[in-house]
Image (spheres, rainbow, N blue to C red):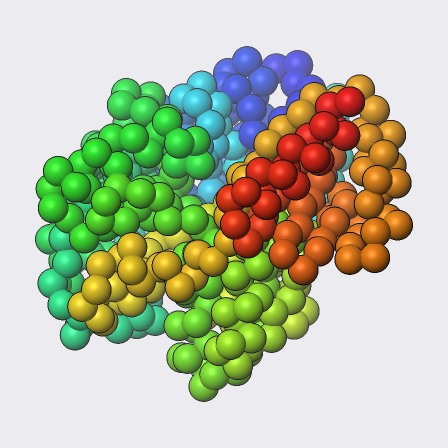
Length: 454
């Protein structure tokens, strides 16, 4: 096919519409290029429940095998299950998923051995260059010694590894509603939760990549509505929602009210610090709540602030030896999980924390939810640079304010802060604001938006 790789090779992964933007023939070339760039003798490949995933995954595997690489196919899996396989087997890996995107999309998340990330600066640009060359000149001749294709079951081992990291055996019985959104949580949750003192109420566990009930994107509040209604109706202790490839988890309390990912980050950070003797580094991106660094310091840890984006978190995890990292988008990273992100492990921490005491989840997380946030607000602007300069000039002379440029522009005062970041792909500015109370947050948010949208 005539493919425009600039449209499908993103900063951290490959993603596009099938078959309009890419297909199995292109997947085979990506497999061959991945084999060349990693130089690996063997790799591991898995896929989600989308209709196009098995064919794309097998084509990629054949492309790699044609370059002499032995391929272990683990079949249906969540993204963090693929990271488990990459880490446990110490092999580069490829996961076929488009995460929370609509059904017509598919993609590839790539990692090196030990689940180390592959992005534009760590191999993805080289992979794209090879595929573009082969699209022009034809695929390379198969290697003299073709690699093998084998299969392996990893779900039980993945579940056992997660349960070894969080002790849930002595918690009080809990009733939990889980919305898998017809995604891979429906595959992993029953095995991970098996034998634990949990009464599981499943929602949309049927694997269906056409997403007949709602999109598997819990970051959009519309996709949490079913779970929010079901939890109080069932008299459940909490609800958990997973995205399509089940690497992110979202939590609602016993009333059906969402628990912010920043509060989950703070809760898990406190538990991981306790597990590590009250010491360690915890990573958080710059638009997570101020609660996170406060809780980390209160529990003996060292908070480290990064830019937004999983490649920055993972790089800083590796550089600093951090024990845990969290993002506002509900990605949670663990040193004991090869620095990779796993929503399932974060969910187990929430269950353990709730089941280890007698109060409801709303009371438990209140201590980790100390501020009022705006959420992310996008504004279409013609001149991103000019609007950022206008914000700077409005605040830079104020004695009570500090400014920094780690990622966009952050303006901070003792009782509030806001960050404005330009989108890399669209003419947008993204605003996040937080303050000690709702009135202050509203005032600061509206001040910033007035300048952005002037």
